Length: 337
Image 1: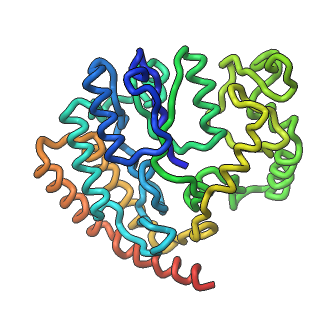
Image 2: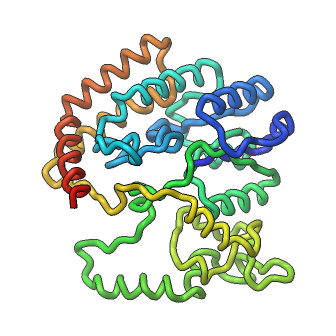
């Protein structure tokens, strides 16, 4: 599920009282504008160096390849058409929105800034962070912001969905050139069947990196000395629970799983063996143009749209249409099974 973390940065939270559980992209726009008006000294939004397709955290579509380089499926529930995200009306609208965010001071629009959104957020110099959220990720954020001395709220942009791209981002794999793939598989089986080992990798050591919450032998309170932010591993049902989550945490996970829809694309993988040259050129082209669009660096809407047209012409010259056509053919064959 995609959410926005909304910190109570120096009192901003109190201007809005209670954040809605679900908002639209237009409502997000309005919130960011109001935050900037109330607190122009902090960043309402931050796109970093711009080398990411932030839109994929704001809209419910499936992606293929690095930075959507093999195309996207915009409506995986109803239409399996693979298309170039950068040539869609959705991306055009986002490009114009990003331009106005920079022009209006909502985001700094500096692709040379090497700080992360997390850095600014924890320093309470950033109001809004886009992230893929679930109970586990939410608890991690809440624990870190508590250590930093403030609270946060959340707003949902996209309903819960188990996506193919989400699964492939976090799944474990064994390298094809592994000398002992059976031993690697043995370790994964061990990790997911031994809660004690999983706890060590996730939380560190009791007394050194965490303590149990008072009156609990399940909930742990981390001290900030060990924080593997992107680590995913172990059977959650056998593991400790990170404060501020409560004893009902596992039930929350199950409830979200029950509520989520499952993408029809799960288990599909595009075979790009015949497109290695195109893949490299497409990716480098995206890195050339996307930061300028994401950071809203153009001087006008007209210049933004002209840059977007130039970008798509460069992608077509790099072979993105051929790659997408091959992806579509493979996807159709996968769905026909």
